[in-house]
Image (cartoon, rainbow over all chains, first blue to last red; front, side, top):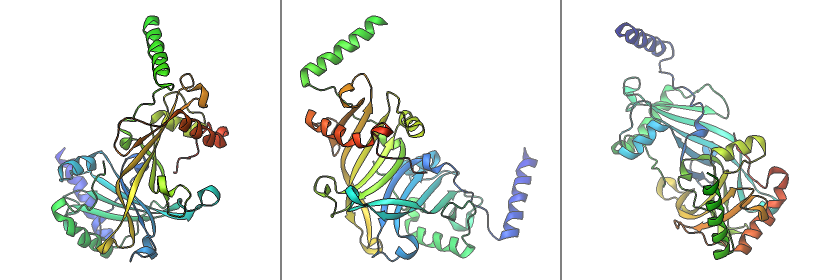
Length: 161
Length: 161
């Protein structure tokens, strides 16, 4: 058991060396997780060019424990799914509808793997891609901003009843 | 077992007699169900006065089977949760945020209980109330509009991937 653990740590170290960051996996099946809340990033928001559209937040079971206790256990995953909008037509005129998926941003808790960034690993997947391309500097930026919510274990969102 | 069934049917008959409609229960726990899709009803939509805001659709497990097969089994429940919006401030300026719950509209499949309305019972609960107040005429109106989607078992929404 101990040897297995060491092998795992060694493997992780190799990944760090090879890419200078620890992989954050794609959150397969997140659409079936708990819907936490939603926002719409409109044209007047500073991030509209990169993030305009619906954003739906989802949590896996471990993250749900974190929302309750304000302490997220290892294995917690929170997803921010960006979805392009389209204007409704006909009877739906005046409605903002969902278009295609824009992005899947994810934060994963592991206080050993992601020590440098508050115990959270950050990644972003474009559209339906399964390979994240967030550079190390991007992760640091995620962490820096999320540090504003350090007293809530770096999580901005709250679970809407 | 047969006697139990008859008792149930009798109880249902009494409810029909008393209120001239069959109860559609509050969909307890729907926030933990599958998030199907969302729309935003904006100020230019014809229903804005009564339905303005976010609308999140949720499905229980049986309704999920219906989305896959286009035939919804008895026990399927689909919820349309209306949520008031509020404008973001500070860093969230330009975002549309969620406010309080506005409404919980529900459709429940039971091809025996709701024969008159395509096998679906309709109800609407205001804000966080647990007692629905949709009059019989309102149900007929729901059914009439949903009849446009008769070839999809009266369900407008489709499951977004």
